[in-house]
Amino acid sequence: MKQLRLLLYPFAIIYGIITGIRNWLYNKSILKSYAFPLPVIAIGNLSTGGTGKTPMTEYLIRLLGENYRLATLSRGYKRKSKGFVLGSEASGPDILGDEPYQFYSKFPNVRVAVDADRVNGITKLIALTPQPQAIVLDDAYQHRRVKAGFYILLTAYGDLYVDDHILPAGNLRESKTGAERADVILVTKCPAGLSAAEQQRITSKLKLQPGQQVYFTTIAYDRQVYNETVRLNVEDIKHQPKILVAGIAKPEPFFKHLKIDGDILKQYPDHHDFTPDEIQELNNFNQLIITTEKDYMRLRGKVSNDRLYYLPIRTDFLTGSDKFNETIINYVGKSTGNR
Image 1 (cartoon, rainbow, N blue to C red):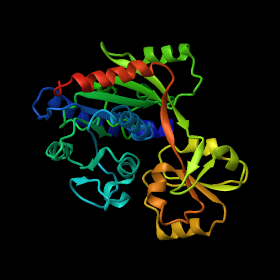
Image 2 (image 1 turned 90 degrees about the horizontal axis):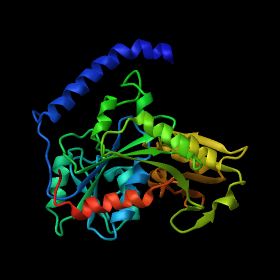
Image 3 (image 1 turned 30 degrees about the vertical axis):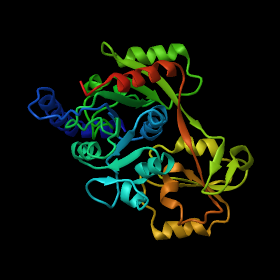
């Protein structure tokens, strides 16, 4: 691996120069960024995938959705539609993408939209009646054409951006200095018992800018698995033979949480679009099929409902959740526009 990185390092330098020039042009206002007259929160990462953006977006929806007219805007990765699409009863994962469709299915009081052009997407959302009072941008940290009012940067424990390299030698989409744009840095997927000393060590390693906050979160699994009509206790099915299906980045924790000897693991690429042959293969199994919530959005209605279930996950803060919540609520409540 080290030898391969050495071979790719010259390409990483070129990529870093290109992304660095692009960021410099935006920082100097040579390339235009667009601000909007309502609170906009951008969630994202410096690395490619696997940091927990979806459960963090859901955390913000739960935090804000009861008291504000909230909208989410995503790219809608791998959707088959084009341009701006607002979630409706006619939408499915092929129209919205799996993650936005998950938001739409779970949170009926939230407007869910997709558009690769975030400026156009926000403009269309603002034109709705009633107008959203706040917008959460999913996976938009590098989308510099939008000048969000609040930036949340995610980095996974054990895979910190400060230890990584720029593509293709590593997994960073831009230089580590991009972290300076963040208002909050979340170290995600931490062990639930991460010590205060280890948290302090990581905080020092991140070299926070003045005013930046850092929090440590973990992925918590639901105690039940679900389909459209039934829920089962995880403890009741954990020791049964089953098929575990995951088409997500870094699925190892999902497998580890449920797997026993004899289980069949089916791992696919992130945002995988299941083929007819793959769906038929799953239908041929007689065991329970447990998948991730995101994959369930693509598989429901195609795999037998009496055997297909999903395991929800959520973001839990190790400490400081009250302070984080207060920071977000204060920004949304007091903000009349972006900085």
